[in-house]
Image (cartoon, rainbow over all chains, first blue to last red; front, side, top):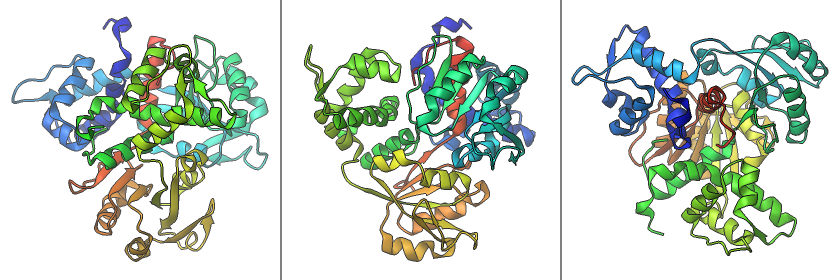
Length: 216
Length: 216
């Protein structure tokens, strides 16, 4: 695939890929070999045509009356997302949100490995949260040099977001998954993804006010 | 606005509206009157043309060299989202994720009022989490009759998701914000919005692998 032609208007498709992957893996565990776009559409509560369009991005073709190869789709989606191998990450800010991410099992399914948590609270340092060891945030630079994670999950209070970001960037982090409400500033070669819980609420409210069904 | 022409491909715009609202309110608090699409684009790290297209949906027009009226945009976005008045909700499942949502201040900015939490853990029942009282899940039907919330936030273990959903629906809930990994089944007149943390991770990974900048 020519990676340069990837367009931003494909991002809704990208957002749906993990949900497909989740269902496809369930089917694979039950020894299913093929799946129809209609089946997946019903599961995700979207139109079958949208499923077929989404899968064009993965370059897997379905066969009429047989459907899509489940193992083919899984491999193709994993390759597209770069999730075929473990994705090493750290998490900074082990508060309630940080802890709930450490315990979010579905993320582990996608080969996300959170190697370490960091927090400034001495009560948390030295403990393990959902099996992930928590270190003092003052050791961030030192430990990042050793851990070689490229991805950081940022769940600190908003007031600390930019300071911690600067430290992460100078320590070699190349992607920041930002759960704070700050619009953090990073160099051009660092990628950020801002999560905003209010986004989902906005979509829900618009759908409720227009009485639309449930697609993403 | 003709609500029926609202199309699903506008949902990426809807997802960005809370972020605009957040910035616009900050500006309004600083007594700013006008804002340019270039300013907002830089804040959100997207192209100015995308900001202008997003605002077409709100039917607010900018004035060349003056910009958009901040109060006009705020009112229009709030009206579009139905966020001009309080949005009453309940939350079921006061675990780490549920508790972190109860403490997520930005959601309160958007007039979301979580009136009550419900949990099956007797240790939690009778307490308040971030100021929200927690009741036994067995009292869901009884209390929903009194609270008249139309929206429920579902943060229970996945195994309980469908049972609780059925109870919510029969108790009059019309919108479910689903944080479980289950694809819950609801009647046609109930709206669901499934949140999947892996969606954001997918977008981040695709952007990292293609070295794209940071737009949503």
